[in-house]
Amino acid sequence: MTQVWRLIPLLDAPGEVQMAIDSWLLKQHQLGLHPSTLRFYTWSPPAISLGHHQSNYPKHWQHLSWQGAPIELIRRPTGGEQCYTKEIYAVVTSRLSGDRVQVYQKICEFLIEGWLRLGVELHYGSAGRGYIHNPDCFGTATGARFSLS
Image 1 (cartoon, rainbow, N blue to C red):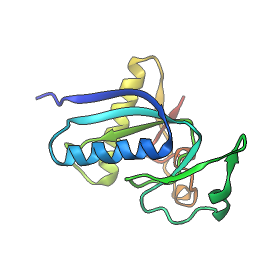
Image 2: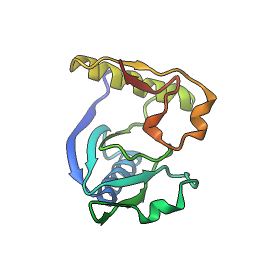
Image 3: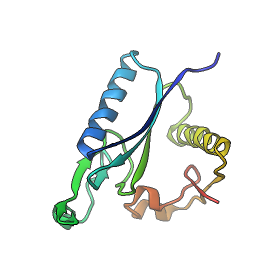
Image 4: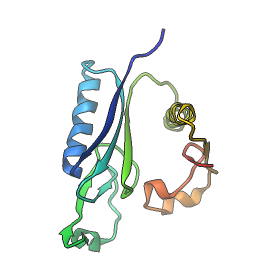
């Protein structure tokens, strides 16, 4: 049986709004009211999102600004480290089996296949323990994360 997914196209909004949408989508999915979802979004104005359990980040981030405006510091409803890239994606699903790494790899395979259909070739990164000490979610590679060719 094929699983139904919802695609939410690129949305440009403040970080607080983006995280509220992620939280709402997660809650609705947990209640069985929404299918698995893939969405893309950008921060406007610029923001830094912290992983749900991330407690270590430079304290001066609370006072960062871009072009005279403060950079919003927000918390995601999920794990990981900080994200300050411009384009971000979110995956909400519950139908994958396996441990955390296996599920993450399945999601990466799903994304790699999707990008390949659009002509963008991605590959898995190389795993190593050093990523644990890098607070930048997208600045690291693991055996489950992908990177551009």
